[in-house]
Image (cartoon, rainbow, N blue to C red; front, side, top):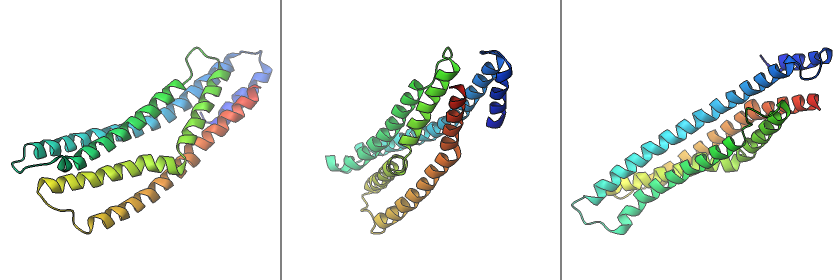
Length: 209
């Protein structure tokens, strides 16, 4: 059932008394549309948590290799691997905070249709505000890129190798490409999911008023 079907159902209420069965149908459709967005956000979280767990495991392995290495190590030798782990941990915590805020904005099962729409609008506005290109690109690309650079440096230190001269330019090119792709992804999510959903909810709210 798409939004046009929902509008037809709501217009049909003019021939029925208030709080007729059509309102329950509308609430069902609103709930289903919310679940669609929730599944999209859940996939995003799975990617973030999976990547964070993998990198934390890999950096822990590098830390143990450095710690039990026969060569003498100083505190400076451990800074890259600790920085890589900390950066990925901050990245994952940032998404966990976002997820917790998103859950708090979800409407309860006992609220009315109007209240559910208002809560969904607040949730959509929050997602739009946090997905401005700079903020979202920094979270999705900037922190992982820093962590990747530190992880490469730590891996080279395990073998007592200095970073090659081409490493920094290579990572800069990767960063520029990652930023461009992430900006494109953000704009696509806004245009295809969040803005249309907000317009649907606003139109439905206007019909209720």
